[in-house]
Length: 65
Image 1: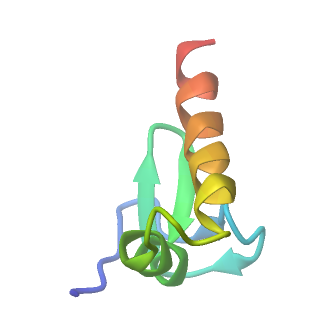
Image 2: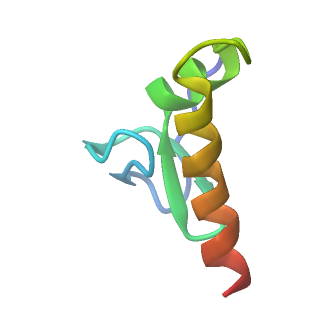
């Protein structure tokens, strides 16, 4: 997977809450490259899956409010 740097590079990741330099912006939220990779590779039966769904839901909820 290619790592990419956005125009508004870096930020605090919506998933891991750590300050990172590389990632993507989804609306006003930042998702670091490591968490993006982990989300994409997580199976729906994995115990972490509901947590990732909740974090992604927070992005959408902040976008519509």
